Amino acid sequence: METLIKGLSPAGFLSDEPEFQYERIDMTTPPNLSEWFGGIDIYLFDQLLKERIVPGSRILDAGCGSGRNLLYFLRSGYEVSAVDESSAAIAQTRRLAAELAPHLPANSFREEPVERMSFSDGQFDVVLSSAVLHFASDEQQWESMVKEMWRVLKPCGIFFARLASSIGIEDKVELIDGRRYHVPDGSERFLVDEPMLLRVTEELGGEFLEPIKTTIVQNLRAMTTWCLRKS
Image (cartoon, rainbow, N blue to C red; front, side, top):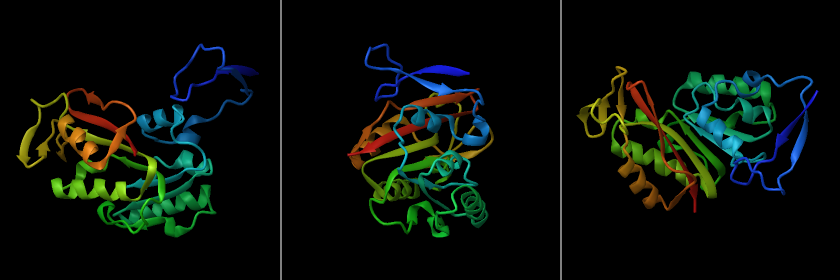
């Protein structure tokens, strides 16, 4: 069985313009999406659909955990690297890479903090930070992590972050100190707000790929997507 898939514009939006053609895809055996994408952040998946992260890109997952966001990239031939402070997390990510992308050297996956990475300047086309920045102990550590991720990003590279914020739940969080808060879900998090993200983006010289987007989860927490291009 074949199906017709409409072409995507460069921005990743469906178009009715005549120059966008349909492509025939063999759907005799539909792809197993969970096998290909695993537990990928849905907003990172959105960047793939918009064709902003293209095959051949050098990807760094800064704070990779067990590698849940890397399954597709490892399966699809991207040049993947990752860091995490947890030795168990790096061991798990190395096992995943050895199975799916055995050509990648083990040294691509390093046990080290995001704010002190050993990768060289401008090494990556894409830097991912998914549910990491809100674990910062204070504003100094938060800014150190962001600046370090920006350092290893190539000019014109993409920085993708998902992080907890106070946006939309300002009256539901309780200040501890600085920017650390008690969150209604019972956790303690470093929370950003929109003015802070706008200020830091300007200081970095970044360009917004899309507006700041925040999802409020049943008034228990707010998760914000911050997606930039390095100019």
